Each structure stands twice: as structure tokens, then as C-alpha cells.
Image (tube, rainbow, N blue to C red; front, side, top):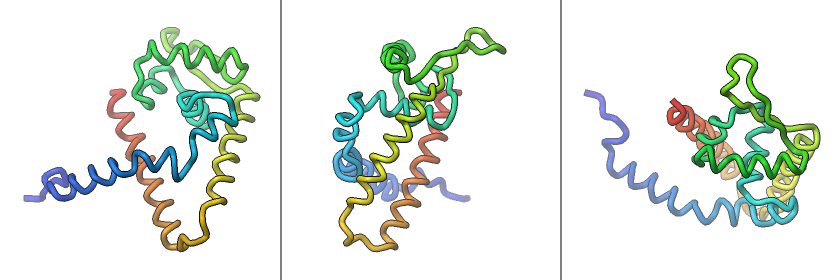
Length: 157
């Protein structure tokens, strides 16, 4: 009988250890989120929403599931971004109970600037990393994104 990867205690422990060890590195070493927040005068949660919406319109439920934040707690975040003229909420024509959120042109421009800011940080990494290491990191990040999106979709039901 084929084993499920979850039955491999050593693998699960290794993944757990790597995720645990990566927590302080992601926002402080690979990307200095505090610098991005300061540069754009917005908290990290707002930046997360901007980045997610740069991929297209999302419902409030989808945003909630992706961030792991309850829908009532998403509303003030969206209100703040709306007040800055970065996004708008629109009721779905198919189902009026669904509210979709999308970036306005000003929001699209800011999302592009956020991406540029992150690109600048990546270009400032030390040259000591090998091409092989950078490619492995890129592939690992792509897998992380893919798995995170799959988990968010599963949670959304």
C-alpha cells in the first residue's frame, strides 16, 4: 500500500522546522516588509491586499480566506484602502450578496510600485548567492505560492 507523505514523521518534522525557521527570515531578510510599509505608508495587511488584487478582482470571502482573517475584520482594511482611492467594492450582478473588490487605476499603479520596491531589494542581495541557489529559491517560492493558494481554496470550500 502506498504511503501518504503525512505518514513520514521525519518529513513532516523537517517541513515544520523549515517553516518555523523561515518565519523571521521572510519579512526581515528576504524582503524588508517594514521598509515597504514605511515607503507606502500602509500596514503589511494593506500591502497583502494590494498584491492579491493586482491579480484581478476578488470577493471579500476570497480575500478573507487567503489572508486567514475573518470577513468582519477585512472590512476596515478595505475601507482604509478605498478612502485612499486605491480600490472599490462592487456588488456582483449575478449574486447581489457577493461583493467583489478590485483595484482602481491609482491602486494598480501603487501595486506596480510595491513590486518595483521588492525588485529593488532583491537586486540588493549579496552577490555571493549562486545562480543555482537563486533558481532553487525561485522554484521553492513558486511551490509555496501554489500550495498556499490550494490551501486557501480548500478552506473556502
